[in-house]
Image 1 (spheres, chains in turn yellow, purple):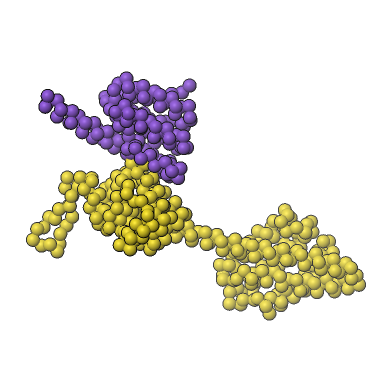
Image 2: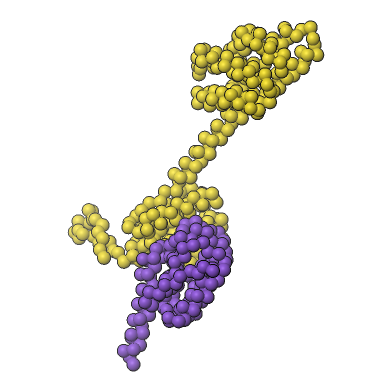
Length: 291
Length: 131
């Protein structure tokens, strides 16, 4: 790579201005990044690549680690600014034309070496371009994974209804991954709050098939093993019909049509009743605890 | 060889599993426990597994066996303090331990046992008064 490096060094100014010129016609986003930053990034990248190519032509090697770090930084910065991955990789790929031009000018008498050098620098710039795409995609995937995780967390709240009574209102479709989260959060909530009763409310679950039922039964059995009673509530008439038609066996599980019914049952099991403290004015009745 | 201590508390036997269960230990616990139930004519057995973090199908089956054997010897088994991870594992293994009573902690477990034994005692007293 010595010839490539020497030529790039010698024509650094020309290559840089050619590069900037090239970009200004293709992928320059004046609305997202100003000239000074852009120029300093381009200068820095060209310097790093030239230095690194002195000792190696493999972008995954130790010599290129500074280049890779720098590329990751600018890729992340540009993703945040709103560049697309294609635009970021074009930033690198548009370096080709000025480099090829410099090589051609310097080696115009030696065709064989010219082709060799063009081939080498072409591969190098392509690999660097791929690196930016990889980084950009990896960055996106990280964001997606984080959002998925947040959605899982958000969609499984465990609420405390009373001392020793927990409720788990499920909303949305239940799949294996979600059931795992539901099960874990319910069981750890049972331990934390020392609860005797947990109510799983499936009012917000649009469909119940055999798989969903299987998941629910697993969760309820696990809660029972820990020593808590688990009731299933919020079963809509249509879902009750589906369950019977599918032949799902819910005999061992205490089910109720509404969350309020399940809650009333829980209070009864715990030996508590709700009495109204005002007899005549029904509008403003209050809940009271009685042994 | 290590053995799991079995404590006698009145009519009940108390077993707290504080170490990792391996198969031999489980087998010896099964033997010791049945011997102790027979010797003291115990009415209740409380097994606390709050420090048990790993279970396999063998330990699960062993717990179910202990409960069944105790029932044959007329003692009620209560399993307390199961960790969430253990519960999930057992369910995934398809072992729902249908014959075993469970409680969240030892306190609740003892209350549950007393309830059972209280019911039994009442019925026996009724029998006695009639005679």
